[in-house]
Amino acid sequence: MENQVVSRSISHVPPAHFLLKIQTFSSLLENNVESYESSEFNVGSHKWKLVVYPNGNKKKKVKDHISVYLAMADSSSFGSGWEVFVIFRLFVHDQNEDTYLIPQDAMGNERRFHGLKLEWGFDQFIPLKEFNDASNGYLVGDTCIFGAEVFVKERNIVKGECLSMKKFTSASPYKYVWKIKNFSNLEAKSYESEVFVAGDQKWKIQLYPKGHRVASGSHISMYLELADLSTITRGFKIYVHFTLRIRNQVQSIHNHYKSFYCCSCSC
Image 1 (cartoon, helix red, strand yellow):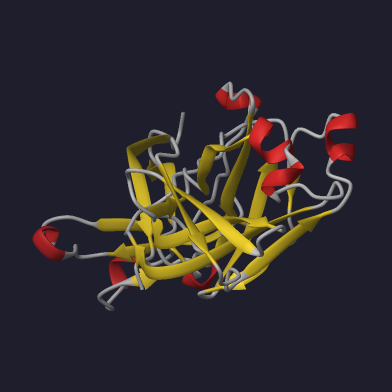
Image 2: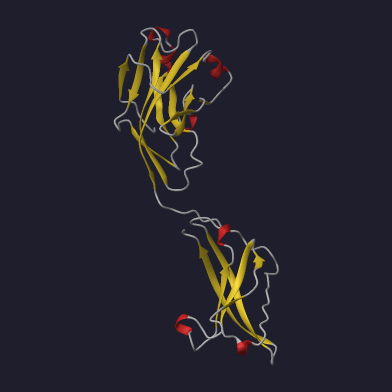
């Protein structure tokens, strides 16, 4: 079981953040409702909800108990690597005594919510036999009330990344030809080709007629570059297979250099 109830406390004060009142509780069982999710409520700049399994969480093989959990309702805006540390308490109302039963476990009330764990609570929140006995006050007139208090301690953003690669399906890769006239008369340090589009991105070739960096004065240097960095966001990478060729106009062949290129944006 995820969390075994090992102790209980009684509070005369209602939960501070959310109450869920269920009328005609028996209709959930009659209609084979496996779980009920409450509406969302906001605490600590986050959205939460209560999840109640009226006949126990079958996925956890729970029998003869009601299962109740606190769940984070919306984490889509957090990005990757997020963590939220929370202290919470779950309640059920004793309508006879106007008090609230609060189950607890040996692990305490602090939990860590993250992308792979959006829900914490109690598999065995309260035995069905005890809950259904009207003399205990939890189910009176087929009505019951659950509640929650949520205190967000801190939120951490762990640096990370998500890799998603598109498969190249085109039978013919894009080809761009840059013809340069009067090469021997080029005087500038570098030249750029016209912008061309391939793979939904804009590219250009940068040429250093007299070499660049360690190749300065001994080689011709050529580079493939992204022409428009505004199309990629922070942390975004583009992996590209490409070939740069120089045509031998006498023998009509090409000297070519294949490479694997990764362009990223960390700004």
